[in-house]
Length: 407
Image (tube, rainbow, N blue to C red; front, side, top):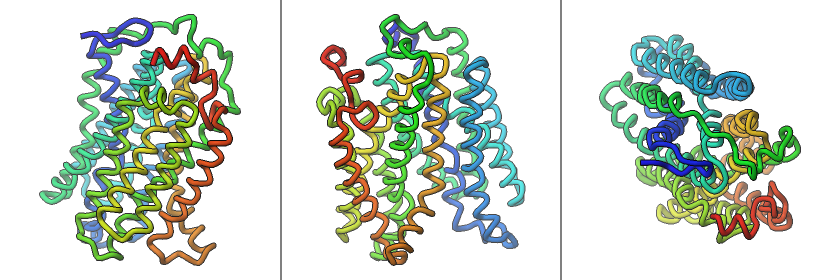
């Protein structure tokens, strides 16, 4: 079976290898989440600082290695870079299974973060290398869908394994072994050059102004919806909902993010210049629903609506980042955009706490959702005013009659 790339076709094995890379990048941190509440029992002499380090330092390590990987991708063989990152990730995951002390876990998790950071920009960089035009947008959507679906499945698996033995959730970090095997297809079938009509070939260097705008937009939307993952459990606890409810709501949130990626071309065709306006309005409405209605059904519905809005924008931002860069530096541009995703993960709790203190609402569990709903609403109004702008909307260089017909 052959997969259309927009500049020819590649075997299904090549597409599967690229999809598997997208699956791997969703794994960092998953093995720790189900055992967080038991760490004081597992390691009775550890301090709260050590527990915080186990969760925060690996994420912090990812950011510089994403940028390093993007820089190295310009002059180095990407397949070699990918296999190096996967190998570090895999070996670190295996080492976590046999770790016996908190110090060992922290050091190994840092190495795992480094390996993951190397792989992350290549998950979208490979899509950009192998696909172009309408096919690239479709594959970026599939890549986003695979990432979020893996996140949901792996979360369920690690939760079950944690109930058997606290070491077993770390087995999820051995998934890169499958990807390492599949990447052999990438060596056999290198990407074809960009066609003459490619938007990328019109670029002589990275458009830094547009890159900065895309980074800002991606940071904002990621920060905005992250309150679902960070604060739903606090909201549910305050409402005296079932203990299992936050996990269900967050899983459905990630499934909602996955869904638009499978139909992103149709969404671009139907929404056109209003795509970001609609997406931001959905995020605002969803978060407002979560924060204002004390109902399990309302919270689940709101989380899913917010996730759908985010899921529409994510692959489009990746595609725009590719368009503003020459082919040889596209992965470098993507590394900057993807790094702000992890920066938002680190910054979200601090930003919400800062705003909470400013407005005297630190102890209101609804505040993070209502605040971010208001911010998203203001951003939607700005997006409407800028709907003909390349970054905030979909200008004629991105949405034209010819491209609409192609999609």
